[in-house]
Length: 155
Ligand SMILES: CC(C)(COP(=O)(O)OP(=O)(O)OC[C@H]1O[C@@H](n2cnc3c(N)ncnc32)[C@H](O)[C@@H]1OP(=O)(O)O)[C@@H](O)C(=O)NCCC(=O)NCCS
Image 1 (cartoon, rainbow, N blue to C red):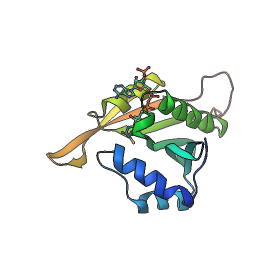
Image 2 (cartoon, rainbow, N blue to C red; image 1 turned 45 degrees about the vertical axis):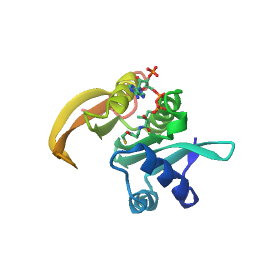
Image 3 (cartoon, helix red, strand yellow; image 1 turned 135 degrees about the vertical axis):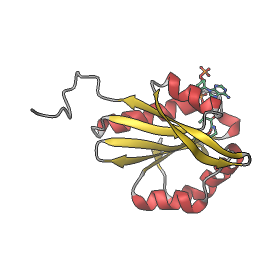
Image 4 (cartoon, rainbow, N blue to C red; image 1 turned 180 degrees about the horizontal axis):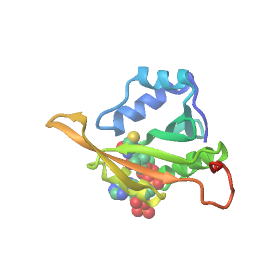
């Protein structure tokens, strides 16, 4: 994995539009880059295969986006990228990672569960879709296991 740059936007957008039911726009990716979100890509042999974006807020970080090109799905790349992003967050002393996901996105929900996320809430009618709206599952992964002593409140 390496950091995403604006030169990657064409390739990222091409994957996004082919794998997401409700794709982000170029402007949303560009805004994330400009805002200093943690934007990473996986590239091999000049081919961009996947991307992931996290937005930090104090000691928590939200996973905003993860995508793997259709040709490379179901080969462990999504899990590897998510693991890399969790390591990044751990290395930056984040306490936990949060995300929102459509319950109908069974691939993503299964990926998150297998990476240690659990469901912590539901936002009703959070997403708009062709039939009206869909709830969002809120999932969280705690990063501090109590052995590294970082970030505990005093008193
Ligand atoms: C979600 C996504 C990133 C997973 O990437 P991937 O590289 O295919 O995932 P992996 O091969 O690492 O799979 C990891 C686990 O996720 C789950 N999973 C992945 N794809 C799945 C599918 N189509 N159906 C059910 N479970 C799936 C499985 O538990 C899998 O483990 P297993 O292969 O040992 O059974 C990919 O499907 C994708 O890009 N989807 C479109 C974008 C999207 O919806 N992103 C999430 C919201 S932003």
